[in-house]
Length: 300
View 1: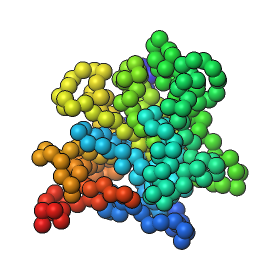
View 2: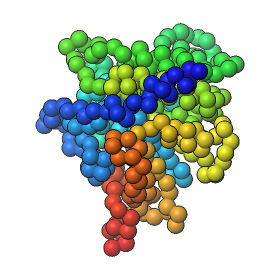
View 3: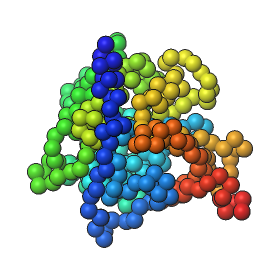
């Protein structure tokens, strides 16, 4: 019943999207690191669509570069960001973001970024040594019937507050970024509980608060695995919720030094329904390049 109610609430998400415009960045901010991708998606930190659920996924490839892109993208856009780091430490994201011209430590200090570092908080949860909002968010680790109510409450408390810790600061639309959802399956959380969590987050953040949500799902090698507790099943279910999907895959021909893989971009909302395009990409030290298949310098 709960899923049905929230699903009805999310049916109008695509019609509720709007564009958010912010002043151009100051001279101390570097230019965008993913210009081709921003051009393909018709977005920039100064002008982007609100109310979106962007689903990232990978198979035989690594889509982490897209997580780093969206983290720095929305921080540049002066959005208030809640980042659920379930697989990496804060220092990992900080080092990569520093290369992309964004200081995560400063963003945390200003109250713009709320970072849940699951790897650091997990021992305290399992041993019951401490109690805080972050350990409460990870209570599924010691529950006989894991659910994500605590994690949702952490997200809500992080993004529903207006402004940052400094009352003089005023942030743009709230943004939730999750890296990554599929790891919850290996921790004993059911696919149904994860879908309940994403339904609630989408209805609250994308519809009620007119913010955005980005989530990564890493897929098993077996593409046609129909197990209801597999990452493939989770990806298929989430694909019906999202407004934009970016699927990263390795090349069928194997490793290539100049082409690292391909991205299938699937527009499901924003007035462009069921339109798909495929681009190849190459990740480099300070960003990534995107190009049409067969147009890489390696094959021209």
